[in-house]
Length: 149
Image 1 (tube, helix red, strand yellow):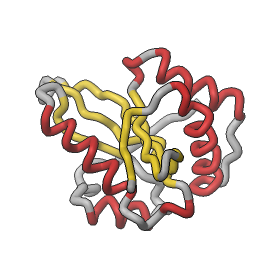
Image 2 (image 1 turned 180 degrees about the vertical axis):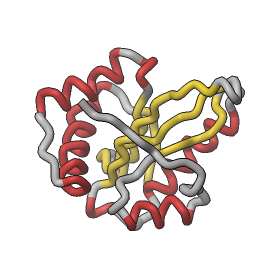
Image 3 (image 1 turned 90 degrees about the vertical axis):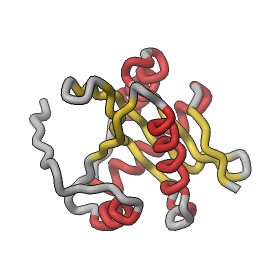
Image 4 (image 1 turned 45 degrees about the vertical axis):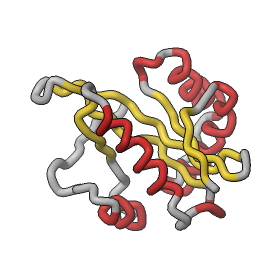
């Protein structure tokens, strides 16, 4: 059985571990562990940055997802961006992301302040794009551009 819950500070090490693996798998990057730990910890220190949810199987955290707020003046409300999504390899293709998505979507539907969910995906991550399409997300409306220091 999978349990979805809001992450706590006791989950920081596990979330940072997931992010290190994800960066390697998706973009062939090796992140600085100290900076990564500080970055994950910062979310718990400042709720304005967002929050994490985790999925547990038999009491072990097997997936995590960060949600960050973005104010929309057009809608007078907040979108939540799904970021830093990771499901441990042995637990993939078992509906864990779908359960996490349904969990957070139900919170958005029940809230007057949240307007919807958004995410971005690396163009080469075809598997993820297929999953997002299957759960009803639309990737055709916007194209993301960025500048990174």
